[in-house]
Image (cartoon, rainbow, N blue to C red; front, side):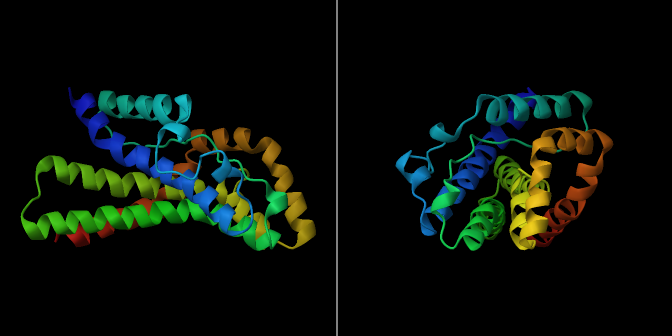
Length: 215
């Protein structure tokens, strides 16, 4: 029963976090000249076109179930179908690539702030219930988790794209070659615990903001 409650509480903010993350990539790409995602119906807040069976449903469900079974808090991660971007259409190219990559994590930051604002409004109006408290806290934490994960400076994650666009051309080309090993490196970072260490400042910030709002 506890697992089903957690699933219900986390499902809404997680689906919207992932949906808006991907839609933001497509929206920003359109601002810089590429309407591929828009033409394919991916610049939308409708979660259905973005849902990935593994990343949006199975992986988050397993992580939630594992957290419920062990009784320990964990990292809740997920992903949606990547939004298609034709990089040849981006003008100017480097600025466009940088902003498209940044748009996803930035959308998660804005969503986290939205959930914080909703929590404060619920408190001020006296409308706060335990379910709304749990929902808004989940909204903040989910979005900080996803923002941190995607800002990991590893291609093909958003952070890797951002770093690539900040490097000089030759260094950027060499750095982008890491992408072929990206998934292997990511698994190593997860197993070694480095990913948790990398995300710690983001989680700490989220908890401090929640504490400040709840005071």
